[in-house]
Image 1 (cartoon, rainbow, N blue to C red):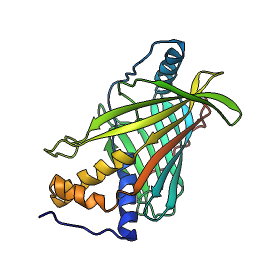
Image 2: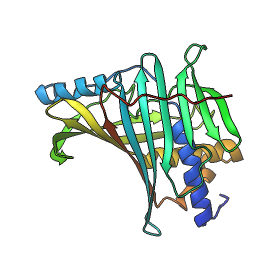
Image 3: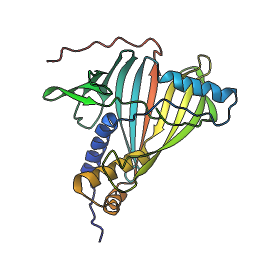
Image 4: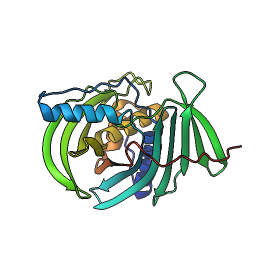
Length: 260
């Protein structure tokens, strides 16, 4: 008999909050690979632009949108940040959120421990240090095969939009024996004049579902059938991330705070 867990609006909000924390701290590691499906000049341009993006310094705005099909309500959390690659430093802060966040600001820098970064997290109780694996933009380290989709104009710039997708298995990360995979679908916006990325849109719906299932199984010792049944009651939630990229190659200076 599968146990049922009934989700009200408050529980949905709690789930969204848990997901956002997991999304920021969930490490997407791997080597920098991208694929080229067709091999013509356009695909060569996007492959190079994506590879260059992973090595670039830039400012960004990250918008995580959640749409609840059951209530027809839409919400969003907006972050702003800067990335420096060598030596690695990153700053990210919450600039807009209707839900109370567990943190408001994070500073990252390369740790003395190999393969780790130091994350200084601003919480209600002050700064907290955590050593984590470096977060990367969605798609990093994946064998991406790009397909040209359409052209558009963004902020007066002519852009070409390419799609790509990849699949990940998170069973090992959550120490789950059952096979638990998700598929991420993306759109890459290429500035035609400068041949750089100015936006990446990522569909997080399948990823957020599997993270919720994995958290349920890990925290509550639920079976995969029980966890999937629990999630079915909130499967009207759709989530996506919009990463807008600014000041490519010349980001705003990161002003490191006084951390005691």
